[in-house]
Every structure is written in structure tokens, then in C-alpha cells.
Image (cartoon, rainbow, N blue to C red):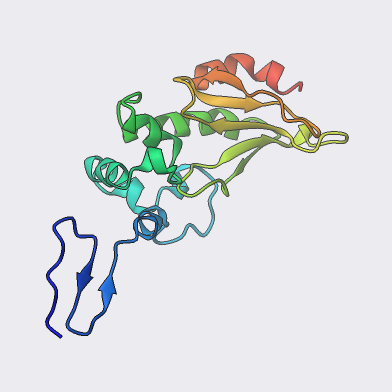
Length: 184
């Protein structure tokens, strides 16, 4: 059987062996977000920045995200990539600075623990260990977000019902609210 040439859009290719190849966008994205080499010990957001999306040229990362319709398909992506896609943050470098600033504030405070196992490609989050007490089921948590331009949300310690996250403006807002946050 003769080979069938690829379609213009690249959707299907048939070889002489009648093998059909189809692009798998989710697989391509999965490989782009996978850490290489894996972080053996992730104690900071910076230690998690090992995947292609963290190291490849920024324009290529954004191009692939858009090509795969990242926002529409809800591809798992770091907070900063969604914000970058919408033009709400200047650069990936700026996002990394925000992550590092938050870690610098919380990493020096007693009771705060960095939790590296967040979503795919994410920077992790911080938990306030002293707030992890009965009847609370979840401790006070600081997470990075693209929901607002302060880039940080604080979720107070809670039981069954999760409270509305409190928006915080970067590390300066975090520093000014730490007394209150640590009392929840």
C-alpha cells in the first residue's frame, strides 16, 4: 500500500506499514511539565523549576501552551503561565521572583513548612504547622495564584467547610498580615 501524505494540518499521517500517527497534545504537555532530572529534595520553589516550561525560552513555552489551547483546555500549568498567557505578568522571571520572595518571608518564620507536592509544574505552597490542630482539618495555607495581581492567597485553617481565600499582595502584603494569618 503506498504511503498517504500527511494532511495539511498534521492531524494524521499514514506510513507504508499502515501505521497511523496522531498528535497527543496532553502527552506533549505532560512531557513539557515533567521535571528533568526530578528534584530529589524540594525545599524551595526554585528547586522545583526543572521542567521544560521552567528552562526553555519563555516565548517557546508560551507558544506551546497557546498551541495546545492551554487556557481553554485547562491544561495543568503553573499560576504564572496562565497569568503570562493573559498578559497580566511581565515575565516568567518576575513570577520566579514572586515565588522566591514569598519563600524568603515564610521560610524564615517558625512554624511555616514548604510543601512541594502541588499540581503539575506548580511551585508548591506553604502550611502553618501550628494551625494544624483539632478541630481543624486543614492548616492555614499560602498558595500562589493567578486569580488576582497580588499573586498570593491565604486560606485560613478550617474544618469541613473551606473558607474563601484571602487575597494578599505579594510578599509585602504577606509580611504586614503575618500576625493575623498566624492567629487563625
